[in-house]
Image 1: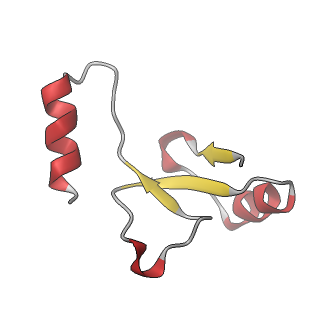
Image 2 (image 1 turned 90 degrees about the horizontal axis):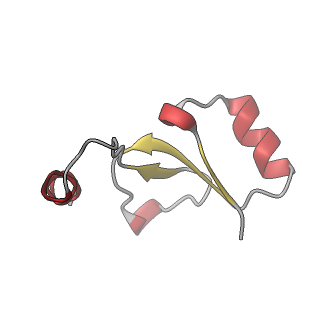
Amino acid sequence: MKGFAYPYGAYTAETVRTLKNNGIDFQIYDIGMNYFKNFDKNAIKRINIPCEMTGKEIIEEIKAYQ
């Protein structure tokens, strides 16, 4: 499987279509968590983790979206 994460979550309908048409199986585009009720593998959300965050801050960020 091949995936692509958009830098800073920046994407357009054209980039989504182009990547999908060129063999990308899933695309990560946004800040947040996915809930699998209406899961779309072409629109997987993400949490932004800057390099200066501590482990504790990362855990708190993950818990905030559960």
